[in-house]
Length: 232
Picture (cartoon, rainbow, N blue to C red):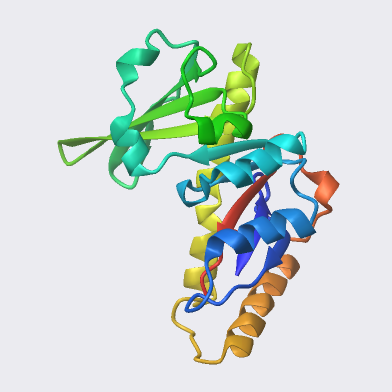
């Protein structure tokens, strides 16, 4: 299943199905956005969905998107080209589960740079870079992630909204954990497509009765929705 979830509450806004052995997640996401009228919303999505046609569709519908860059694109991105940064933010130092973490966010304007022809209609105008530092048992590691958006950033407040959207997209993983652990979604499998879809729908309904209630499409505020696959 593929679902659209609210960033703040992790409530399911809309969902659809696809067969993993015969179909791709990509067209299922496009179908969900089109049929549920989500293109005008502010949507965050994983790097798998960095597709010119899909981004152009959202941009043409006056919606905003935040999409991760695949590792191949990240490897080709020269951060020195974007120095100095337009806007930035540093998270507070966090200690949890025996590790110390801190993230640094930077926002760059892409309008001054040449964008390949096939991306011209996608509305790309903002690049975001997130550097995560982690220390555990005296071992220090660093993780670098990039995101692109069609939202124009001309103030710190607008940059902060995108930074919050990145954090909100990560927060959706909490919902995945509950489905996998509490509801044993990964452990309960069937070779029957209909049964899998029915069980996955029941888990969503269970979540609704536990507080993840279905919300109206027009109830999302800011980057209200993440488009995520629900395994099962």
